[in-house]
Image (cartoon, rainbow, N blue to C red; front, side):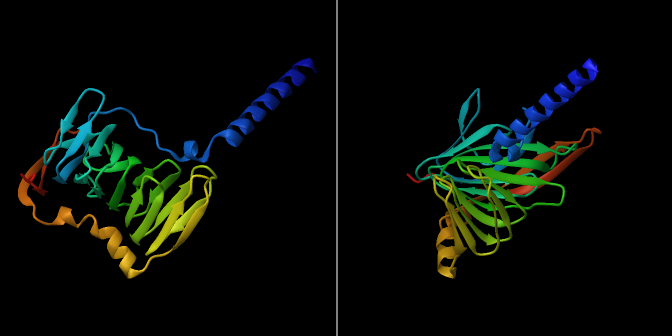
Length: 250
């Protein structure tokens, strides 16, 4: 009987511990992806307008067209800098001036497409064109939101303004755990206290939001970049991409 009581006490304590953990772990901690350190190339800088910097634990470098990114790299744009980042799954990230973001991604076995990708946006803004497939995950985190993307064109700022041009985005409010689904032409803004405002955008508002990134599509020098991959089976593969760069004005 004594052993039975002891066993029941242990089970009760374990159950209580699990309850407390679930109760007090924040929504952000429950939804944020985890990644292992890796030197695998997960994305490339396809276009840029100087100046853009990529940094990691060992070095800071000025960006060149075709420069690769690995998990944990930080990309920073100057007050006049823009960047276009192309992921292996053909997702495109356009980065506005005065931005800073940390990129992480896990690849498939053949190292030629992104399975799970996370961008932590610390400063500035992004305009995304996400090519999401059924077996992939893509999320962007800010101070107070986690945006899970389901294949869409949308924008997001570090101060928690999210807008959707086309597609669908599921937004989790970190401070409250509230989930809001945004579809075509919708926006969402989150205050520091977690208060949410959402609504529908007009054609003029949509055009103004996306027009900031038009510089990445004009007055650029076209070049070709060859991407070489090797699968775990030892097979070589090559893909050719058109890349563009804008020279810094004198």
